[in-house]
Image (cartoon, rainbow, N blue to C red):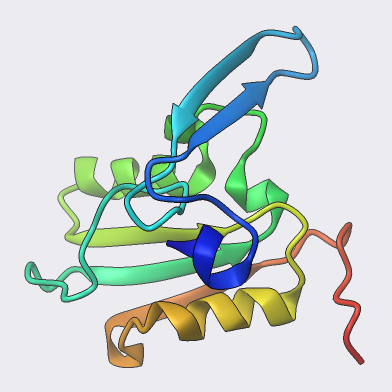
Length: 130
């Protein structure tokens, strides 16, 4: 779980508090078994899916929307509806820098030949490393 591995993040099935800044409405959902805001999945890829790992910060994590409204979740749903065998894997956390995203990708141990990588920079949380 990323909460233990990195010293930040969520433990398996940890609770995520969501607050809509426009309405003030508060709700919650849970992260997956690995501590990511994503579906439960295995990294063995038994279905031979085309996989994309999206690395990002709070914009990718989607702190102000329900998990099913994150762009990674919606993209996978759309691809499934269109009959594509694809998985969009969300590895993100609020405040992450590029170096932290790379560390998480390496630590997850997903075989490189199984994925296409996407880095979702937003320009608000610069990488402090030189």
